[in-house]
Length: 333
Image (cartoon, rainbow, N blue to C red; front, side, top):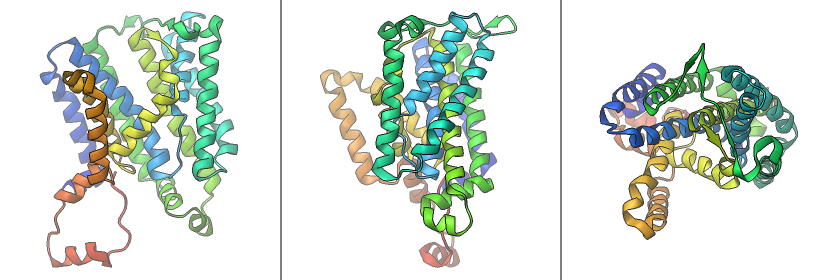
């Protein structure tokens, strides 16, 4: 049942929309709204990063750099040059996409730990530039960001921003699901299975890898711009290597090659530290234990494991196909 729900593009998106619509009934004050907004922003980045890691099988340890460029680009254009926020976010996103294309062409020729090191170096370079260009970015102290406004209406307050981020998340998931179900998405899954085999089948691996790298960078840039205008302030803390690791961990925890797994992973790992504050000095110990136990008993990630657990065979024919007679099973989405 859960597998069929995850595989259905419309039903899965409708379920997520229902959660977004009903969640405010359980949010008691501004703090809960703030946590929900952070979940949505992290989920947007993770949905894009999951396309790169989960479906294409290409690791990136520098995606916080694209997130930071999206945040700082929009902040600089609006605060220092007086651009309208939407225009600043659009131009910044195009700039990040162009940069990702230029960077992706050479580094995506690498594989395995070589690719991981190259993306790590990229993220570190962006982090250093952001932290040292004091006159432009404010350096380690950060800089203020004007409020997001459209046609004179300024988006202010957690409740308003909840719906802005909620709609953005739904659009991000819808685009990702359509991409996964397109010929490009099938090419990405083929690359993940075997890059050599995909090229033998006529798939241009370099073109598809660069394309998905750019798409994932665009997701991160948009989330970064929204984060900057929501917080009203941006610092280099979100451009660090540790934030990149957090994003990758969310994708792996929720389930790679699972769009909704990326959303769930972002939700759990964003809210869990807030819940664990009850343990005070043992907070990080408990958090690490939860992560370790989840990966031991759910190595495929949270959503794919639960989907497989509750998806029981419906009959002898179904059981025999699942046992190995039905071909390659597509990854959970």
